[in-house]
Length: 247
Image 1 (cartoon, helix red, strand yellow):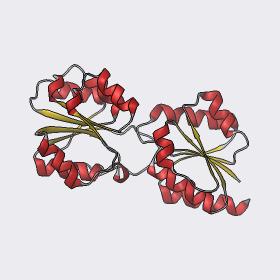
Image 2 (tube, helix red, strand yellow):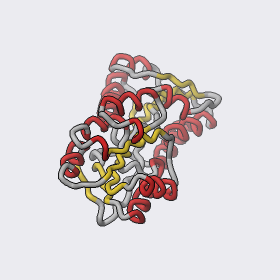
Image 3 (cartoon, rainbow, N blue to C red):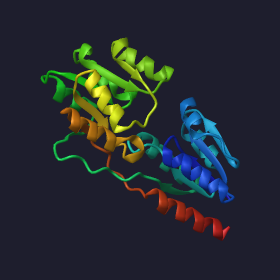
């Protein structure tokens, strides 16, 4: 039985390894070398690296019994393309979606990075941007000296920091997830008054960020999750197990 997992998340890695252990032939598609590194190596799992267009996705899905979309909750464009490719390839599709977090009552929620930047425009104080490097450009209109960016230690991330004008001394290139203690130390070290993040759930360290912001007296600004339907890890894994029994 062949299962294609579009990964790049903790859940995608765990699911692919679990399915291979159950005897499935698993192909995992990740966009970057960093994603491949995080995916790791497991017997029965073939990892393909690189951005795929619609034709490339359909080709990878050819002959598959199931497509599991385990991309990040905010990767809306990728999810739309994967779903469309599955329909074109005639392959069953499942969206593995991590549960949403319970947001603190005092959190400021905004629809996107541009809205977060507008909220911060007339509010003084240092800002820690923990949204991922692709959203940094939205904040380029603010005083760059007050912007601190925590990004992955990858060349692409550093290039996007430079493009957004983030000062080199304000770049925190680290691989998470992080503990609340480390988050709190960073907030205090750089006198952060605003922490901007996404709801990455437990695997993305959201709870730790929220706790650290509360203890540091910093305002937590959350980019709202896109609305979409999906199932949690255990539900998708059980579905796959039942499918394997039928093969």
